[in-house]
Length: 109
Image 1: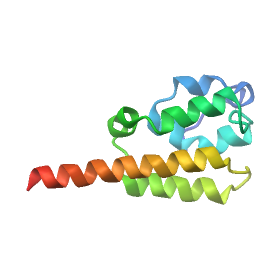
Image 2 (image 1 turned 135 degrees about the vertical axis):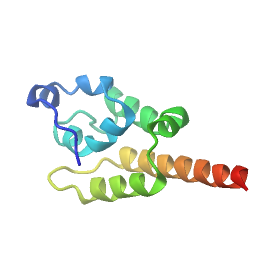
Image 3 (image 1 turned 45 degrees about the vertical axis):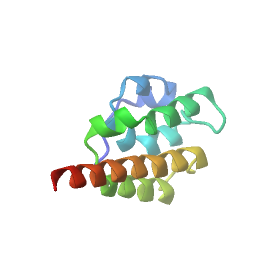
Image 4 (image 1 turned 120 degrees about the vertical axis):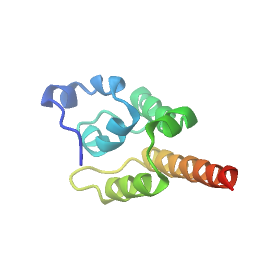
């Protein structure tokens, strides 16, 4: 379920930098629709960097399956055009979460 944010944040597109990882994931579509992550923009590059940051991914507690659902939702683009760099970043985040889950399972054996 997307986190509710004030319309002014969407128009300005910079308050998202205060979001935690899960909140950023939940609002990728809204932020994309608002133009916060235009392809090739600095904001887009920052979002990609945050999405693939291993520490952020792991601290978020989001599992690979949850990130996969977020990617599928983002790709559907209900009323936004998905940005390829964001899609690739989500794919990398899924891989990070899956690798961590495998490592944890092996350590528990």
